[in-house]
Image (cartoon, rainbow over all chains, first blue to last red; front, side, top):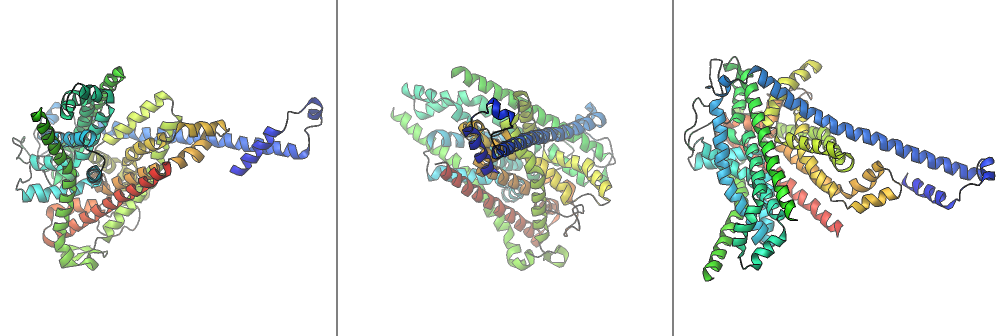
Length: 328
Length: 287
């Protein structure tokens, strides 16, 4: 087909336009007329293919959007219409009776996110600074990158059983917010590193040159120039990470816990983040007659939280772009 | 000045240690998962572990069913999700008007944020009943899991495929269009082949995502520990079996679950190495 196209084109370029007389007899020769027809056929076919492909690709993209709208719409509408009332959001969970709320789970998710971020940000940002500003390309950067890539491919349930063995049992933390936070910090380390590195790389080189030109050391440059300029980028990454922490359940179930009645009070308390509690509600469902309502409401609330976090991340990202854009 | 240089040295060392935490992390994970699986590996033996009957009560710890489940759901997810994801990437990089592009990009980001347990819950309450009614079967199983996985891997594949397609020099596209090729001919014969290895990496990462996914699959696949008789009858994958039995198992059974974790780790490592090889090839080709 490709060959066809090439020869056809050659012929067309070489042949001069027909004059009046030739048009009257219908073309210079039979051969040329056939050539011409072939060109037209090929071009028509290409045009049709192009149109079909365009329709198909548009269709795929719209179909994807449709699925997303269906997912978000169904979860939110169902949750909002059947479950989400102040009494449910701020209420106490019930293990056997119906009418339970999810307040301790909301607080658990919040504390878990806070604690995880408190561990993951210093680690991840520090590592990213090293990779972007201090390290020379070599075996160290290769090994670190391999470590980060590996961590980000490990399934979250494997993080869960690892956290259970190391933090819950070996360190003796028990099912607790802290054990979960340590596990999740490791799980999210690659993401924090990547977003921070990208934010640092987006800072123009002239900033570094200006700062070092004034006699600042590398660390002073990082601390006083690069980190402040990269802060919105780092914040975006942190907010997205919080979204992932709140939505994570497989790594949480065997490190933090899945059901509590009272709000957790210390990092060493067991807790039940929303995502893990939905799993509990699903598995122990039959115990409470309105378990579907609880899970519907919790899923909707969880999704709302994640959507708001995404929105915040987007706002922070826009601000970041505007700020760097103003300099260039 | 002396102080500043000393401080600089200390800072560099501290940051170095922080960077090495990724390495320490992966080493610890491999070490502890391997350590916990030793009892099963030595007491039960590989022959038993890689057989197809999982019956801890009678001392049979075959994990082949779950490996099959993982492979089947991953393949299903890729078949359903990859065309959609690559198509979206082509749409976003080649066809979309500005407005549509920002909407679809936002959509992909949102989809990436939907927690897997939420998607699983929706699958369990809406999709499984549909499948049950349509096919007159239990409804849970490889088909339901594949559909959810197909949705979940879209953001992973699309994001990386976009990078790959955008990395193709603009001049390739211009040259092709100037030769009289249509937009679709340009995409199919020039841009997709040029971005081939990047697209491959995208699909491999999507595969990794599908293999590791736990919660969404757990709600729509079980409960059964045998090979499924059809696409719509229950079975389990490696991840879901670990999730469901870890809480209530002890001794050798628990250790066998860690063997499954080890298998997952090995698959993850193999994927990483494959990606390395593919992207190295890409760098060489670009030179």
